[in-house]
Image (cartoon, rainbow, N blue to C red; front, side):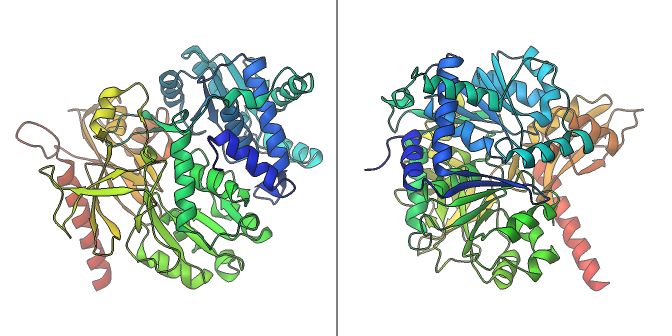
Length: 560
């Protein structure tokens, strides 16, 4: 009998694989901590009891989890869902303004934060209605001595853990309180989700969507369960339940890894190897060399970067069966080299936050280079031309999607929802073509979305930030090709007359307000920007210039 909701899926999966390892967090130096499936069951019950009884949360209350890949992440995410609450995933690297926006927009009552960023709390709490903070260590639940050593190295040697100056409850203290509640029989965790079903809201996954305004995609339990089943159908026969080891190097708060690693591979009884940060890429060496990694979900820049690591190319993981690429286009050269080095395929798919995220996925056998594959089970696609009609066979059109994995809408934004969901069809904003066999390929991105290492960057947000810098008259932001990140953010700035602005000033200003991957890598000063006859800046013209310059540089380099 299929699970009715994620909490039930967690419970049945943990019972099925009780004594097997579910999660292993690996530090760059090789130190590690494990969680078995039965421990995940017990600890998530403790988290749920803590949230409902100790903190008094109710069904539907939002719990923001702002953690890197660590043993604590699945416990607090699954625990929040077991409590009947709504999970709000947050990037740990968010700046204070970004945290404030997402916490206020979601109405989160609880924030679960990694201690590396405790210095942001005073400013954040002063501007939000967050009632409780749980502060978590990356080394929580490691063996006691290993955790003690690793934490003290980070705190006293590397000095990357700031002091905390506001009242908080530590992650372990919270779990201990939850355990005491359960032991005293004050709670039955299963009753928290008794009335839950597929339509019950599970998570708010924040995204710019296709309009660039940061908003929460409302993903239901049914959306997420459907996507798990859809992935399962596409890889059927190639994933051995209870016997796989999946590398979780992409952040679990991102929808790709959230569904692929935290949900799908967990459901499959796989052991997820958690890496808190892939930068530098040498951080992955111990995780890949010390464990029998059989699957790697990743993005083009990750695969490309690892292929430049001698330790990987000299000794590729011998148990690797396959890799799954998403988030951004997989370059053909990268795919070919990956398969040559590892002796295993990399299958490309396509998705977006609003679809939980998988829409299409290549088959494990018979995948097509340059294609994002065919729609997954139960998913319909349409290609719509500029007139709003179905594109003719073989012609490009905006990709529209309908299926059980498509979100309910955007949290408290009916107008934005109406722009994206039309008669049950999700308008992706991406232009695609479909061949006679049903395989799709992305032709171009509609409008001006920039994708940096698989993360969406919206020009409006960056432009608004730069415009606040004194001395800026006009600004336009575009994406330009980048060998490392797929695309890089480039800003064109017209300074005010008599004002001097430097690229370093622009970057320093941006770093105070937006996350690092959104900060312009390139800054160009100009006397004017190309505009339409009504005064709108022509970003397309700037992109065309940048592409021509790149082509000219490539030709010059070849001739030279």
